[in-house]
Length: 265
Image (cartoon, rainbow, N blue to C red):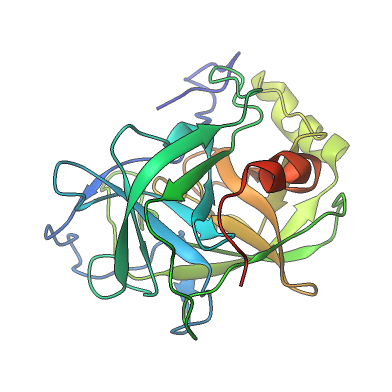
């Protein structure tokens, strides 16, 4: 797991939210919440969600993603692996839905693993994804988002951290609000953690509510326009009252669309 540059671990952990969870191993509470402090997402309410799975049998959950065309899933660069699959069309990644194999992945050329900037990548499926009432692409936002914008995050991340790493296959949702870039920089500055507002977007709910491991790659969708404005990249594990940091969609939209494979409809 990548550590944000300049980080004193004793003061603040800022790491990428990616961690494998093995299929068939129940959580200690057997089904709890994910996205800490979130609520179960209504069935079919996020038809663009994709679960990125890894392992020899492609049966281990790794990250989230969003459908942006019939063959392209948008996620983070740090989520990409040599062997991946994606599951779409279900709120329960470990059951139901449709699994697609992956033919290739594309990292943004500006991605910096240490600085965790330009943290986005595309996952290209081998076959076209069949769109249905519960499987459809999300629109990408082109407007630069400032503060005070309400968004909805969805994901399958850990439910508790620490001390027990508790997960669930149930898709969870959380409303979060964007924070002005300069304000976000000030929040992290005392901990020697740098935020880059031109390419990163900070969003926050409140202490006890936020992203956690496994939420990497998952989308934040603007509530009023139903457009994706961010991708979960890194944060302070977990839900400690600090903003979660997302890769901005608007400044990367041109690269995304130029490298997208497959029709939108």
